[in-house]
Length: 535
Image (cartoon, rainbow, N blue to C red; front, side, top):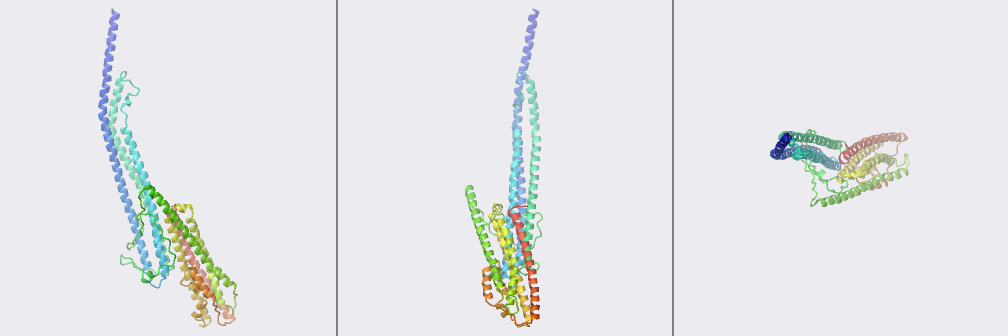
């Protein structure tokens, strides 16, 4: 009986425990129901917080783009003002200044501005790539944070548990989960704010790199345009005007407008699509001048993506083909230039130095042959740049950029041609002066010029129209010029004086050649920095 009573009591005890545990198991459901509203509230908060963070990042991008545009505008305005200032100096020269020389300078200014446009666009392309990368990064970070909160598991508290065996453990876990869900929005807000702040900081680095890029390219432009002013004085023999009293640039004189440079026109190539280059921060010295109309650069048509790509490839191939033709034409022209000296060598070979011979023509031939070394080295300097432009690296930089470099290289040689002609004119005048003095004025300029080979180069450019010079040379080499009878002593004195004249000519040519070297080095720097993007 006692055993039966004990068994019944034990059964009832176990039954009461089981019933109590079942009640706890049912409380698990109640706790779970309490968790769902908190979870929904968290999801709503997370979605709104992330959306707010995205809006904040969008505001950061907006301010960044406004600042980039402002910097671009300031640098472009500085470039335009500097261009206007230099054009004012070139266009304001008197009618006595060689108009072809001034024309070369105007073309040089234009090409330098075109190259600056390429370089400023390169800077902007770097910004575009960096901005796209940073936006992708911050959105990915926001997505990770959103997912980590929205995808919080509610049911992971049941993992490894049994709702009928240890329901209280599950209830405790659910209570803990509820507490963490209620705390999560505070953590989320802080994390998202930190992500947006970090994003803004990285864009600050992009902005600084952009400003540095613009500053470097603007300094390059300022240097090249400054070189134009140096060439104006040293090559064209012009003088700098006083500071402008008006904001309008001086128009070119009638003489200047009437005669443009005698250089071959470069093939008209469509320019690269470039946004107006204008930037800021600490732009170089601003020059008080006016705007100069920027060159029209048409936007490429965009009917469709596939069409655009094909159209761009077709245009690039066409431009590269034109560039190849232009370079071939330059090489042919330079060959014709050098052939002038072959002709002079034949003349010199047929004459000997003596009192009764064509002494003056022989000296002139020697002077012209002394020029050959400088002309040949000038052509070699140009050729080195042209060879660089034909490389795969240059082709990859875009045809417009390399064509601008080709144009500028040709212009630098044309300006050197002006310098060389100036040296010849000076030595020609000095040679006549010596002969006139030695003969007590018995030699007139008219008599002297009949066989004056140096005069064939006067007003001509050996790099622009060598065929014209050849024609003049052939005419003059048919005639001969002999000095009036001079004593041996007088003749020797004349020879010594003409030797001094030749030395002066060589010195003049050295200076002119050094100027060309400097301008070609600057052009190479522009190619490396702007086209090849070598820092």
